Each structure stands twice: as C-alpha cells, then as structure tokens.
Length: 298
Image (cartoon, rainbow, N blue to C red; front, side, top):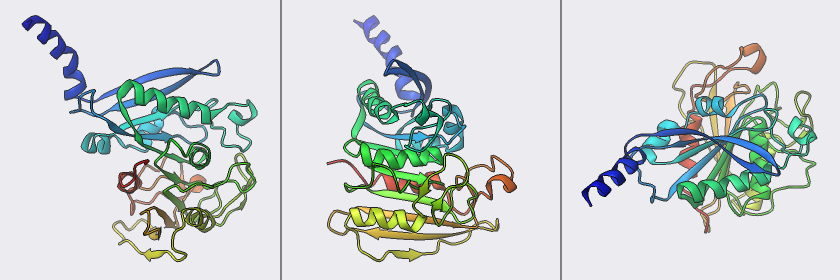
C-alpha cells in the first residue's frame, strides 16, 4: 500500500508544485490544430480553474503570444489556465479576407472544440472561459463573442474592433473590453475602411463600445476617468465604463492616447514608424484579468 501511495504521489506532485507549459493539438475538420497550454503551479487536477484563451495577431504564433501578452504571472498568482492557439497560415478567419478565411477555415468550431478539450482534460471551469486577442486575434475575439457566446463569460479586444458588414453582430449580452490606440496605423481608431491587412469597413472604438453597451442594456452615458500617467512615454489613458446595475455587466473601453498598434504594457515589437508607440501607462494583462474575474456564465 505504501508503494502505491508513493507512486500516486510521484505522479500528482508535478501537477501540484510547479507550472507546466505544453504544446498540444486536436483534430478539427481533418486538420491538426495546434495550441500551447500553460498550467499554473500549486493546483491539483481536481480544481476547477478559469481559462484565458489568448489569440495572436496576423503573422503571429502561439508561442510568441504566450510571451507577448504574458498572462503567466497572473496565472501563477490567481490560478488560471492560459491557452494560446495557433491560427492557420498565422491568421484567423474572423470573416474578413484573411488567409484562413480564404481557405474556409472554421475557427469558431476550433475554439469551441478547444474549450471542450481544456474543460475535459484539465478540469477547466466551463463557466469561466475568457477570450482575448490582438489585431486579427482581436477581430476573431469579437466574432467569438457573437457566435460562441454560450461558452464565453467575457472578452477583451486589443488593437482591433469588428467589421460592420459581417453576418454576425452583437445580439446577446456579453461583458466586453476594448483597448485601442488613437494613432494605430493599421486599425483606424475612428473606424471606416481599413486600408491595410484584411480590409473591411470597421466600427470605430467609440462605436463598438456603444454597440455592446446597447446590447448589454447598459446606461447610455459612460463614466469617464483619466488614470494617472506613470511613465513619460508620450501616451496617456482614458477609461470609459458603461454599466448595467441590474445584471452587473460592464462594457469598458481604454483609449490609449497617442498609442499605436500595440499591447499596452508589452514590448515595442516593431519600430515606432511601423506600428506606433507602446504605452507603459496601462498594464493590459492586469486590467483584462481584473475585468474577466468578475464574470461567470450562469
């Protein structure tokens, strides 16, 4: 009996004492779909953990997103599973003319089956599935909020919006956060026709906030605050918060004044003349998790 208990302890110990990052895959529509899973330390397999699914941008990769939008310190501290999926041809089918779209890839189905896998394999909490993404990954997040809202508790979109002409549109309540730079050279802050990338006519930052606020039956006027400037990097932050007192759903917008096509608090991954400036006056990962953890599917 002692030997059996020791063997069981040896197998359980890695799951409970240190973090693990795994490269995995599932088959969807005959395609090998890859993703990286980060499991925090100090949790037993029977624990139901919240899940953050983080979607890379166009030309990005799952491994890069795990480092770029680094939720791992949050995962360790708060006990959260982080999953970074890999898009086909380094893109997502958000409905616009991306490489994945041109190949007819069903990324909504992929994320749906990925959620099932994480819930089943790692006992993720099906009521606390959250999705975030940047750029193409952010547009995909908006699509998932419309077409997979029965499985997602809240979304956060960075440096992206939503195409006005898609068959999908916000229709069911969803807590939503959008973070956008006023000097984003790729995704126009005020909306309109995108001249670069996958194209399409998109909602402006203010328009997409109002769109979700209307669907969520939030108050018409947001509470506007100006978080203090922590770093003199040429950027500042404006926060808008729409709320529905009846169901506690909120729609939050962060305007990064003079910010570019970047992840606030992240790295200057390309030169400023290409993507604009990254702001260090907002920690996007911290704000996103602070927002996410307030919500659970009923």
